[in-house]
Image (cartoon, rainbow, N blue to C red; front, side, top):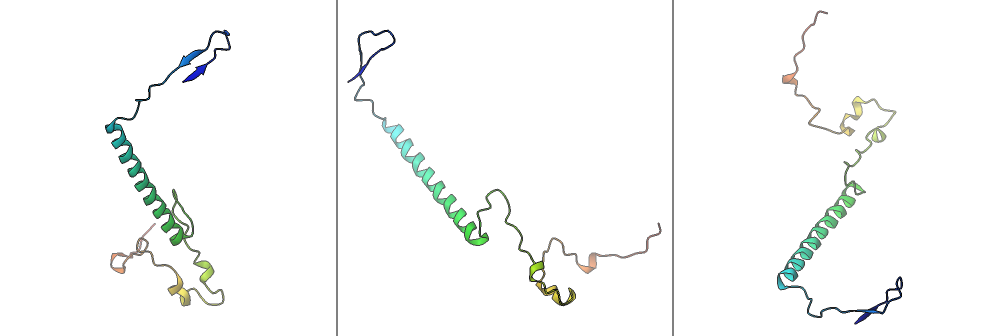
Length: 108
């Protein structure tokens, strides 16, 4: 039992009691266990994803894309760019096949 003194009015102490049979119901206990297991599974997956991103990119980059590597630093300034084309990245999004290109004279 706990005693509670009301110092504001300086009244007699009020005895606050609690019921010892206030335990979680079986359904609440099952829901609590399932929720905590799901939370820990999500936490483990999140830690695994972050760890792999850290290994792959050298940082977490959660809301952003990782920075592109600097290919200019890999180029030799003493050679021409045509001799070093193989050092540049190949991005299919920016590549256009020759068959699609049509050159014509335009009068302005």
